[in-house]
Image (cartoon, rainbow, N blue to C red):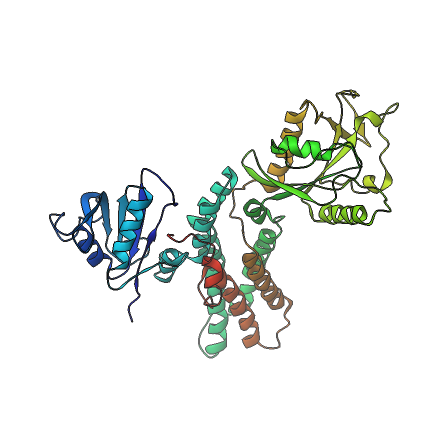
Length: 454
């Protein structure tokens, strides 16, 4: 049976100068003709040309003065006949036109992501490009926008499909020729010649996986946690960075018990900043649970901001409790707060690591802390010149591909047929990322986070 014709708003709800309704399917042209009636010189407007028309319901009542566009398939986003209605964005206008569409036989409201899913099913984009569209829809920072656009434009798909999978299929063809035609006059060492190519490919995939989860962090947010002793000013610093009263501030030690999170746009990078309980031994069970959660978050964080109390400066340095000093590593920035009360020397440091002076009370030094944090985030998770995997499902499939290639190179298969099967499994794993093979079980997962009209 032919696919049903679907329709949905493609713009956000609420009053606006413009709203867009999109239709896709075999009845899109008939629906457009029914809405425009005799307002057009021909039954349908010229393809890809915005045409002004009065939209009317089945009773002939005028609903809106609109622009309509016609994209006959297969030269459309979905590969089907597509129509777009560019209408005024008032709620009543939108509701009236959606009601008129609902009364046209053969039309139904689209499910979330259904337009993009049809584009995938008609070969207009692969799954990685569809995921790029979803990332663009949900992008909140500049880095997320850039990454989503690159993926939507096919950067990942070309690497996985046209690059690596194509190389595997060539290698598989050579292996199977050696198996299927042993008596033919083939060049000697055909199968052996595949091994160096597979080795190069295997190393490229391993390097791609060893990316510090860069692309995934850009999608989800870089996890940054503020740690330190009680009353160091962690909650005050969080409020300063968030530019709002996100956490309760008090001079009573142990005020913060649970983890408080805020999202920041840090120079275009998404950051999930967490305030935690002060680290100390406590007989209070609730406070002890807060400390446990703080340490657990520290273990999971991408970066740690350890906040110290500048008023504890004595002689030539700060005495840091051993349990806090044990948390200092390469992913740590040391910050000394309350410098409005006790200014620190310009070269203040701890075991050779610079101390960033700040006053959460006055805001002095805050720009330098933000600049240092942005530098660390950009160094670890900034966009690179090469394509970046952005989802756990990519990583899972690539890991399976790498395991199959390692089996092949280790010579674990007792015969040539099983060795070829390892290459076939590797190619199949790559194909699952772009949607080449075995993807029916994951389509709902890929498209479920889309908005209704995309």
